[in-house]
Length: 130
Image 1 (cartoon, rainbow, N blue to C red):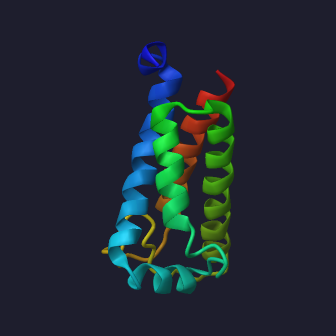
Image 2: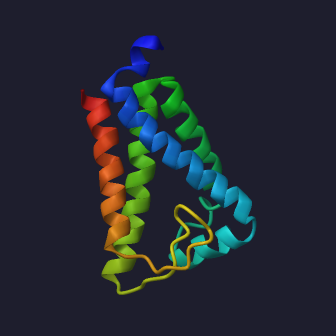
């Protein structure tokens, strides 16, 4: 792990890991509020209860560097899926609030959400291919 702590790949993955953990914890704190917001956003109902757990687990594994490539791929898939959902909503002209990083946010989704996700995806993909 000492070698990983100082590697650029680890830092890129860890940055996204911290964001994932923060987002997941915020969803746990929100209790019933976050699932309602996710439903309004159009998230699949089967996925809504698992999202906070997935975020916290993936974030923790990204930071720990455990099964690095598999976790990086799973993180890319999860974040890409969410980014596609946001893009579809924006393309349809639907701008519900996004409780993506905090349930306290009442701001409608915007292209800034897509840019943020693309930056995180760039970190993950770069860490994967380096």
